[in-house]
Length: 250
Length: 250
Image 1 (cartoon, each protein chain N blue to C red):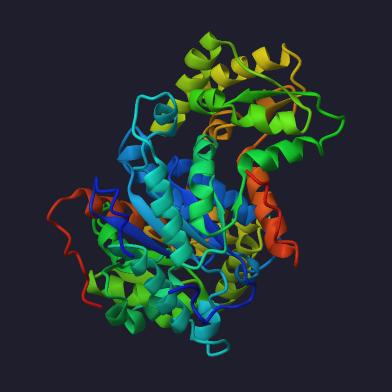
Image 2 (cartoon, rainbow over the protein chains, first blue to last red):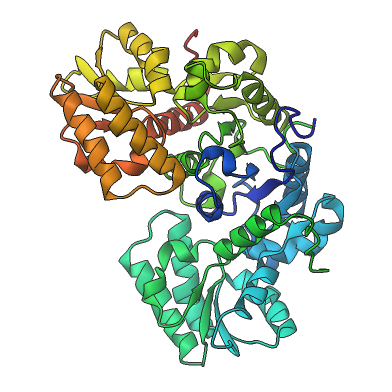
């Protein structure tokens, strides 16, 4: 079956390919709801979420130490399409490394979180020339933000190898384990400071777990939350009639 | 299709029939995730969520002033079943008034939130003889908690008509509109006090919006969150092998 015939107010049905991790998926859906204008339940967007936390770790796959998650991503996309989704959002930065492998098989547009963040950076004033990235080692190695920021002429700076491993990845694992605390925030704030020291005028919280461990006020420059940027892009798309072709050509 | 063949770690796939309202669904999924034991993504439960905020208002239907949401609930259940769900949870108290109309058509067990709350109340010490209810007028009129607490020999007390309308319903609408603030908390805390004055030894936050507006420490007695109780019941069910028959015979 596709869309239940009994519901028709807006044609868009948001499909969320989630579970990477599950807490980030819950947080993303909360952001989508709070970003949607409206004063009653009925003003909100129909959404279907496939949250499969058993999808193999994306970073391990990119580092060659774990299985390829592509079959899981394809299976999840199929569930969303069959449930009636008209567009897919993937609230996991690292998973975007696999988007080129699934995009042509999904049969639905994918609103690209990394592309939306790059575009969003061009809207912040004063103009951003250099942005820093806090992300998984998988996302860093895959060059996802590098590629997209290059397209918009923004320089990307990264933590050094020690900070990436001992601060960023330690903090991400703590959030995934539900054990994050003030120490986690300190680790991430220190890593962010190493980015502003390299000239970063904004810091991208480039793993959906990071905003859960790093409050925006712990960083001296704007902290960009890709999940929020993605939620805003989905709401814009769903509420802007006749403008459904904002694909990025990946 | 049913379950993607590529994922098999646990057999249970949680189906959440949501959107009533969408913020409560996001909150419920966050509670399900935080209730699940485990230290990595892969320890969590596969979950599919159908969140249709366009489902007609449940209270209006029960008061005879709006359309019957049953067809929407059936359509959503079908989406969940076809996506591979093995059990359904409905994180909306008022919607449980319609469970008898859909239970025999869904083809999947429904873990009954109101039944789980009644059972949970019997596990609180010292023994609860009287419980109070903050809920929509629809839930109150449908007698959902009355029926289930009766089965367990617990007396139910309710706000008077003025408190129900001016405090409880005003607060629920504020949460649904995303405009809740300290005033909302005061309204709900006042309503809760009218229940403890009638002897309530526990207060049921019997509408998924209420815990979003009423912190537990604003009430003198235990505040029972049905969404959390439902999440715990699902985790127990999914992690207890061979004990999948906890239906309630509604």
